[in-house]
Length: 496
Image (cartoon, rainbow, N blue to C red; front, side, top):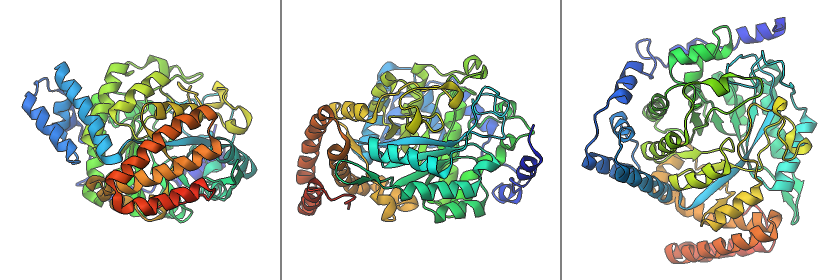
């Protein structure tokens, strides 16, 4: 049972006027009948139509719902192969051959909600509850920044008064303040993204002030009947529209970068994918810029949570491959995140479909980086991970595959966020800065954290990238080499 204080906190959370202001004639932007009609059509698209859609995606334009629906209906293996090839071309055009890495940091698993699929649900008596103290947050950050070498985090909180906006702000400040000793000086987290419950506009303004990065709120499922079934009506999360308009409130509050996502496995994947497109297009229409990132987690096993293994909508690998491909084509300018929920084989394969960000050395047990290392403890986790490889191993694999790991956060600190970053990504200009900064930050990480084996693999990719800068960006080459040499000499956090 909730305490009286919890009940009072819950009663004050939802601001109905911060839902109603965004509705159109009392309706939200997820038009279920329209979406269901698009995804249920069995008409096979003409091959030339598909090629035209692929050309549009390559021009870095968000697709129309009808165009995305046509991609979903493709059955011809040759056309599917063309879709996958184009998805990777889109990724290369917008983001070059860079992969951004981050770590999730779970700070609290107290939660007032009772979602059927979540190991943190309030009725799960098997879950070990914990909210990290500020000293514990500092210790976790020291491991991430000083031992592993991460520069970006996604911090995660349950919805509970113990982890309200004041706690979130204090923990973000603490993380940014940590300077952890490394081989060559110190490591520091330079970008703190946040995944948490929906907030009111004034609370979002508070987080903007402390330097919040991307603000993520996943709708979980956009299908209203399913949403109501898995999120009990007497809980905060039971309010579909409060969650649906979380990104609108964030953008109104001045948070430039927002991240969307659906939990694939709760309802039909085609409906969820189409709804993500509707959400992206809604943000573009209302605020002039779509989501900074889209995530596509699949439902995974969680301790004492039977629903995770029994849903009739669980997504197999073949359908998941289609999801990733079509999202890359439908919202071509947006970053795509695949996480350690997936096993190493899936992540290795899907890098060729266009994802841009992933985590590594992942520990989602509360307090796990300083206490559990690479162990998984179900009672302390929201779900069970599929890939527990170290950041060093993952980076070495990327390098062997021809990808450079970027630790760059300069764009955010130079104001290249929101509409600015999207315009530059669509035009290809941001890629010039990102390529150069990727090399510099990768050099820094190799010297400070890499094993000898990974350093050898990294050296090969760095030399290839330097040669590309010399050939493709001759006007920037001399300035770039000056900054690169300073990094080799031990200076840190240098960027364009």
